[in-house]
Length: 158
Image (tube, rainbow, N blue to C red; front, side, top):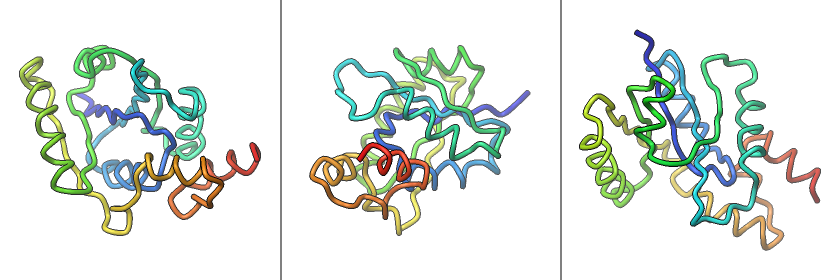
């Protein structure tokens, strides 16, 4: 059986914190599906297609990483793609408390799906999409927080 993992998130935009988690999870799984969540209660800065394209560009030489958009319950999407693992990144203790609550709910919904937590590298602790979006909206230079594929898109749009 293939070890397929879903890394769900909004990824608006993709940051170095996100790629750090994926890169360190690669040795653990046969395949990582980056699930770009479509949440009707959120108004993203970048389209789902753009966010998936960034992952395709960043991981163009890594066939074990793919990106797809999804909506609905994460555990249902895991079943659809054959994933038995959910990957989540943790920056702070408060992240763990929030993520554990979600992991417990997911385990109740389907006890065959296990949530795996990876702590972010300390140098990426302050990298949050919310902060990066604010920097971008206000004309600041967010490049220290972003992969080159995202930087290139932002340069082309400006």
